[in-house]
Length: 269
Image (cartoon, rainbow, N blue to C red; front, side, top):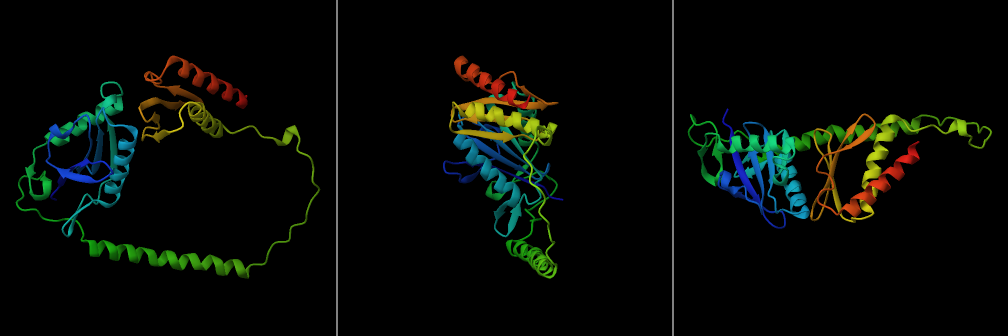
């Protein structure tokens, strides 16, 4: 099967621009998207100088490409993409996951390929001309319409059943004041979720515009306009911050956030 790749630069405003397939495109003031059919993956690489808004915009474009592919003529490149792998150049050689993904991306870019028209590269060098393996727009539209029909029918059925069933008769019982015995302690999962919320609440006391993301390995990342604030993971029922968390903010703010978090945690005891 012929496998293709294409590289994009995300411009201001979120427009994606196809560019030459080259490692030199990975520049500090860019967010680069690399679509690779050979690995069924889409890479999003952010340069060191890219701010929060630019990275967030690029992520939306990458997610759109992952879901729909890229249309060239009557063909769609990357319709079967399964994974979106995001890389922050600031974390390379500091965070193992970003370091590993960056090395993987470089190998993809440096893999033997043949350049075709429209900035497309072909990883199958034994093949000749560009043969489209993707479906056309018309065929995709037909599939969507067919998938919608059974859903519309299934939505009407429950309404008919509801009208035919008699309403149950509920006899009111005595109303009692809540006691200490009726108040249940939060479950372990709820307790962990509460601690994650406490981290975010503590940070919001100092930064009104933050971006929170959850990685595939379960790690949470919190960032502001000027860069990262912290990253943490769940270890049992505890929050475990990474070694470089809060390194980019003042010590006073860091201590205040920590004290607020500790105070909120006491509510769970």
